[in-house]
Image (cartoon, rainbow over all chains, first blue to last red; front, side, top):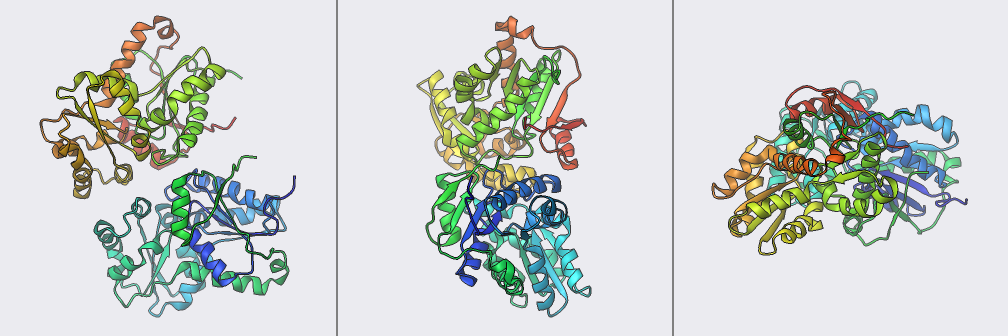
Length: 276
Length: 276
């Protein structure tokens, strides 16, 4: 059977929030063909265990690699935090030793560790991402003098998916969640979930003007451009063109509409089955 | 391979809320051995499409039947609403023609259609349950003179799972959701999701004392007792004993704790893999 996504740059997310990452990559690196895969049938990952997220992530990433992607970016913070290191160490060398899988925790952590002026970084994310401690490990690994304060915000994804992004209840929820980060006087805030940039204005209002809130998608796209510049042999494997593909494991009209909202323009979603 | 759950009365739910149904069945029919299966790896079902809920439900029910359950109760309202009729008509006759699978929509609908004094019934449920129109069909089928008003309450499950059951935000959310049902002056309210009985007091306070809110678990258990009395040949197939089994597709400490809270006493959860 011929490959379905030959040479395409893979972007995997648990759902549709990762389209913000795909969009930023397209803007920063417009020459490459992208293949996006959202595991809409099994979202959300944010409360699931490390073992289950690992299984779901290897199945999804394995699909993209087996269909011809030379490189996959795991856009989902939860999957990057809970599954990526194990996937890179145990699974990838056995199944696809000539491919690469990158995540979002390390590039974002490197960026904020370098950007923080006061040495106090706040991280908001899903319960599983915060519980994994991945951002703390990576930021401290880059700069041990930075103190990292985390806050899980488990209800934000349901609020956003419910279309409550602009409601006062959501702004209040954000204010309640970030209170410990304000008290810790963090100077930089990591939006550690692909959904949260939708609430950037609410986070900015709650944290105040002295807190820097980088755009995670732009950071990931920039770090990916760095990576490809440093690995020309990998860069040459990626196909050129504008024929991007957007795949989902559950294909409904509602997801098609949401995807258009995330990406900023209409797109064609294709349903796929990850089971071999 | 020998059967894992020989003769046991199966109870399937998308997660752990169906333990309220299992508990009511144990209280009403204490002689039977129960096998509970919660699809914790793929919950929640409440926003998923009919096709996907059908696939997940046939996999889960198929597991219980293949392991020896002669009868399975689908405790999940979403699965009952979106998948049960198709499962009973297309799937069961092909795969397990000698078994029975019952749901919760029909027994609850029959009960409220008979109980409603004023002929106005309200139904609250997940987005998928409400979208399916299953309660409207079943209640109107039992008594065409009853008018049914539905309201999807998509954020209640996340609030309950987050442990916010007793917070004022949740009571306010319930008041906001039921406003159209109050305006329609419903005399009976169906709590059409296994999670909602946790918020029975909030619903009762919001609806006022003139609205009757039956306990869905007690209704389902009573209707099951009726069914078994009318089908003695089926009743005889169910094994006796107190060695109940509680199976989940994702097994974590958090789920074990939540399960104890739903059931009202500690229990041993066992992890299972539905893939053949």
